[in-house]
Length: 260
Length: 90
Image (tube, rainbow over all chains, first blue to last red; front, side):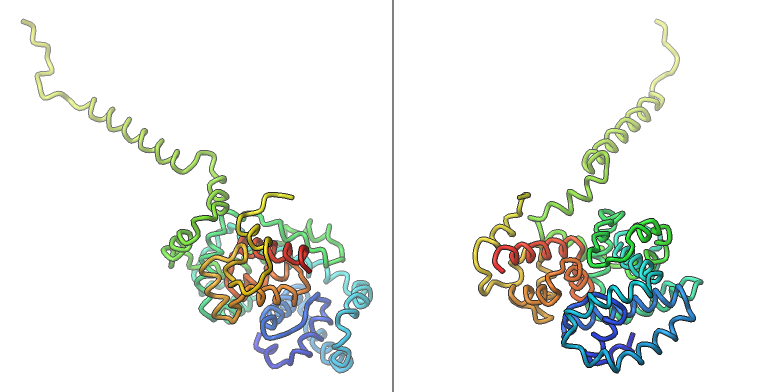
């Protein structure tokens, strides 16, 4: 992840173009996003074909010399390169698209709720965890965690990201390959860990926005019976049980009939 | 046209001017504070960031979630708001 910090803006744009990632200008505000994108792409590729990673980095160095000079044409070039690269990297494009399909599933309610130091046996997840530690280094980490955790029940299957119109390669294959999505969802939900650590700030966050009823209603609609209804039913049931219990208690009087 | 929230309607009804970034639909108070600390204190700066990403809603949402700590809902609403503004005025 730090490797990309040493690249200049132009070099970063060249890498983005080489990996066929649609992007805008690389400026201060967008740099972090594009570094993250490149890292995700390389991690994805490393996961699929380990021997290729060295070759890809080597080819990056090779192409950097000539692609850096045409940085000004970056708005036109991606379209031509799309056609060229698609034929050569059609295989990896499917998986690349799949990674973008699933890495957005922040709301996947996978039972991976572990702490910050979450480590799976597979080594491929290890570097993504460290990446998330490094990326989320700033103060937005806690707010991002709790915000993602809040959206968890509402966005169970976030298929909204399937509208990746700028990824022209085969989309049907990637959609069918959602079975592979366990890794990326675990990868993307690992930062959602330690959700129980700060529930109070989440509650205050909800309170600040009283006019936004949509998230609350969205969460509430997941239930068949509304929350207040459930509590009411519970109280009625508890009252019923208490009534039965007290009515079954023996009277203090003589259990035998006192015949006059 | 589908139902617009009052904030969105207010945002679209007049020029963006010198409005604070909290005026953008979908930006909660916490998110607004985050954005201001990052330097996005005015709505037009956020608009500028949206334009930098080629008016791509998905990209903008990703950036907002990743770099500013927004929720998905906030990102969707604000990107929709800015997209609507661009379609009306740009």
